[in-house]
Figure (cartoon, rainbow, N blue to C red):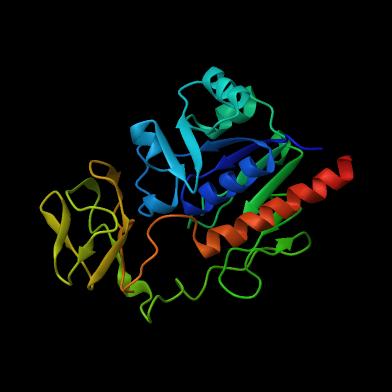
Amino acid sequence: MRGQQVLVLGGGDVGSAVAHALYQRGDRVLLCDRNQSAHARRGMAYTDALFEGRASLEGVEARLCATISEVRQCWKAGDAIPICTQPDDLLLREEGFDVVVDASMRRDPARPDRREFAGCVIGLGPGYVPGSNCHVAVETQWGPQLGVVLVDRPAAARSGGPRPLAGVGRERFVSAPISGRWETTAGLGKAVTEGQAIGRIGEAVVTAPLSGYLRGLSRDGVDVSAGQRIVEVDPRPDPQVFGRGERPMRIARGVVQVLEMRDGRNA
């Protein structure tokens, strides 16, 4: 059975890769993200659709839908992934979904249990425990288990930090020093030098932590929280700024594997 109705919560690089893979599989996918999302890796996600009405990722378009009716019209047309900013509890109560994928990748330890709303709830990453707050989990930590489907054990706790690029790990990221409105005229993918001003939040100036290319850059004008990552600099001479990343794609393949298992059971 194809054409399962899937709600993907979280429109960052992981959620966007999951939605992309399921759309190509032939499922009816709805991508749900926060209004005015500050996700920095915009070139690897559908984030810009929230501001411009549409965005493309490796040949697949996402289209902003303001209502459930518009979502259904987008599904019927079949030429784009609908993306919306309605509260997830409202979507779950108003529209029946066969599958819910939590790709929000939140850092807080608590994970909601949405099993009452769908026959299959897939939790991505730390905090998800099959049989407790989801039906199945997918591993999201770098390593040999990345993307593995978990049915009888929890996803690994967060550890180790980001995978280094050219030997640079956490040092390539900049987090918001204070909460407020982020202002920048910098461009995603552009070259920067260490110490160069990238933007500001109020009187707090944010500078590049090293020389390289802007792999991540929260969109100008969004409200950010203190500690939220807003800039990422890729030090490599040939950076990846656009398209699906390796980690998101491996996680997405895990989600596809879960749905293929469901197809087999419902065949």
